Structures are given as structure tokens and as C-alpha cells.
Length: 419
Figure (tube, rainbow, N blue to C red):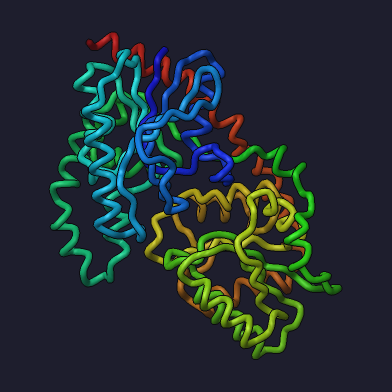
């Protein structure tokens, strides 16, 4: 089949964007390995790296059956900005009006509802082909939740046309994929008839075997890591240092640890973002004995870092609507006990599978007490570590992606039976 993927976001597999394998890259590689001809339409502007990849339309060949087509769009500096909205609108307009030399057999897309479905749903209806939506995030909830609570009611009203159009799109899809169970449950609550359409949860996952075998020391990381003292525990966070993460709360906890003169607890923080300055200033002021900032690490360094760590920190603020973060796959692949603030699916897994402890986001006492509880109980740490390692294989991307082939067959059969 000729399959079109549409998603303006995500790193692409080129040397300049060396990062973890993005969801649509995984999908494209797998479907092309089955013999399908796959083209992924994405933006010329990289959301992740905030830079242009090309000045115009450009094809990047991944393999004989899979290529990425860059659609020229403007860029932007801030994630929440008019510039980002304008980029998405331009992308959708150009994809919708693109002249396809050959009609696709299927469109699989992930698009912000702010674009009103033009690069995906409406394109599929124009071409009279089946369409599958991949729910990777909740829009426009993601934007609304970034505002203070007292302003959210106002913005809910402002986004009413977007909510209404999203409901219409949901009701007319031929198939629905989500990367977490809540991202499936919420749309089905909005449009109950979705339950009668082909649907499936496919977790992003990681290559678990590769991750576990790749614990090789990175020279740059080795220069920054100190020798671990006897009895010392390393609590590690690696990710974006932004407002959706409970970084400032973690620094408040670190102050309490310092005041309590507990020299056996060390927080390792890696990443980049708006809160980087606060982390660096804290470490400079208080010394690196309690908080050590490692900078932005190469993806291949994470496995080694986690192999030296004792606890993985899945710390998010209340405004986050993340459900299944990639770092959770990393922590379980590494067999780390997890301290987590997310509710929903991750919170449920942490509790049910006994892989760690949950705490209340933004609550310093809650996070501090959880950290101390794990520090004091070596038996629990070992139990959580063993359980974490066991469930890691569930989220292996090589197992998860195999779900998509029979799912697409189901969508195609259903579409042709009703059209």
C-alpha cells in the first residue's frame, strides 16, 4: 500500500537531529519493512531544535520504501506562541493543497486540532481514503492548562470552535490510535461511537535490549560524574527543565536535605530548558554535593547514567497533561525504582505493579517524605527495582509497533465494507 504519514512535529532521523527515535520514525520504518511505500510529511522547521531544516520542499530518503518530505513553513521561538499556531496553519494548508502524484491508500496522521483537521482528516475525505488519527497529546487542553486556573474558563470558551471541530473529526475517523490509555478514554468519552471503530493503544516504548546493552560510559559524562560514596543514593532526573516539570519543588527538597545534613542523598539533574539557570545557581550556591547539574546529555549517555543511579525521578507539575513519558520506559528498562507525580496510567502502574512511590506534585513535604522513605528502606528499593525491571519489557517498542499491522488491516477492511 501507499501510506501517507502526516505530523509536523518530532525529530527526524538525520545526523543534525540525533535524538531518541521518534514515534513516526518508528511507524515509518516498520511499515516500510513490511513492503508498504511510506511518505511522512513533516515541517521544514524543527519544533524540537528550533531551527529550519530546508528552505523549501525537500525529500529525505530513509530507506527504499520510506522517505520524509519536508514542507516549507515559518519557524517560532516559543512553544506557546502565535508563531507556533501560524506554523501549524501554514503546514496544514500546504499539505491539504498538495498535488499528490499518486493517490494514497491510507492516511495516518497526528495534527493539532488548532489546524481544524486539514492536514489529515479533511485531506483524507477529499481524496476518499481511510484515515487514522494518532492521539499523541491532548489539544487544546495542553495550551489551556498552561494558563492560571482562574483564566482557564475563559480560554475554554475561546477554544469552543476547536473543541466542536475536534468532536466532529473524532466522530468520522476510520481508526484511532493513542500512545496511552487515557488518551483513548477521553476521546471515547467525548464521542462514544469511537468505541465501535477500530482502535488500539500503542505505547511509544524503547528498544529495551539495546538500552540495557548500551550502558557504555560517555567520556564527557564520566568527567562530570563523581565517584560514588559508600551508602550514597543517586536520585536522577534527565529531561526538559521547564514549567511542566517539578524542578523548583525538587530544589526546595534539596534545601531540606542540606538543612537536615543528610550527605548520602545526591540529586543528579540533566537537561536544558527555562529552569536551567535556577538549577545551575542552586548548585553554585550550595555546592554540588547535593545537587549536581550534568548539562544536556547525549541520548546514548542516559543508559549509563541510569545504570549508576538508584532512583528515577518522574516529576511533573499539575499543569502537565503527560500520560506515558519516555523517561518511564527508560527507568523501567534500567530497573530503577520510580518516584512519580503523574496520576492516570503511570500513577496506576507505579502503585499496582509496585515499581515505586507516588507523591503530590508541587508539594515539597510530599516529595521530601517520599525520597526519605525510599532512602530509609533498602528492602523496598530492591523490591521496586526488581518489579521495574520485570515490566520494562512490556514497553519494548519492537513489541508495541507490531500491533499496528493487524490494526491497519482491520481499518482497511472496515472502510471498504462501508464504502
